Length: 363
Image 1 (cartoon, rainbow, N blue to C red):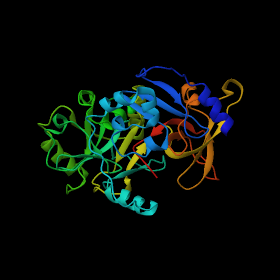
Image 2: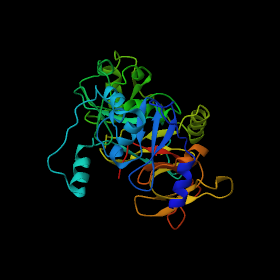
Image 3: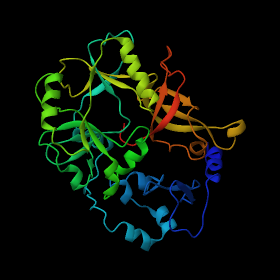
Image 4: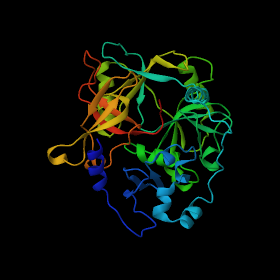
């Protein structure tokens, strides 16, 4: 509702005369309509929740809009953007359907995981840690590509030493550092910040042979690679108790869960039952479609997110939001990840809890 939105906005600090924001600071800027926009500075990146900023295709640290210029000044923005890569445009705009088809065509065809059901016997399968990073595909020809098919602007030194074969993996900074990882990976010329990033190799989509054979080939190929390229360690599951012990160890270390892989499986370039996620709670994506006003201690800010699953089912998520996120909730139209225990008979997630905004997936 508009009253909730304005209450949320009023909580945001306003600082006049500043040309640079503190890390994590959000400032309100009047928009052309009734609703102001929020300019934020996080991890070296200026962002704005206006459509003009969100719809740009440039790397996130080289986007701007009139609201950011209003805060920083035109000359400061010109200086900041002078090393930006050229923006490519098309003369004729695509229809929404054509744009969706074009986006799907450029996406790398990767193996996607299902979810483990405790009724499924996975003794004899291979398990590895589920990393909280950003999925990436190396094309074997010097380029890293996101799951959505966008070029990742990794520095040359990071790409040196990659083999001439395609690789499926994860760009990862560490447990609990998803936001920091995506900020670095989605930026341009963030050279030194890449020093903390590793590329964890899961598989090679084009390599022949069953899973175990592919892993042996990759170990040999990557044996002399730079230290930031690592092959993911897999351990054989000998019992469900052993698998749960490993899951608990990962969770205690602030990890996300486990991935389990069917032995002697081929690389399928689609969602497959040969690769499964094992987590205490399930997770899924939803689109934000509105806000529920807060009550009591949350009065005057966001009480819950109104969201929609990809199948159209709508529900609310009120758990998991920090006070800061209630003051400045995820924008309408954004994709979020939430956890849940199970689905009701009506197809609604039970005990949903907000986790984070997803910038590496779209609908």
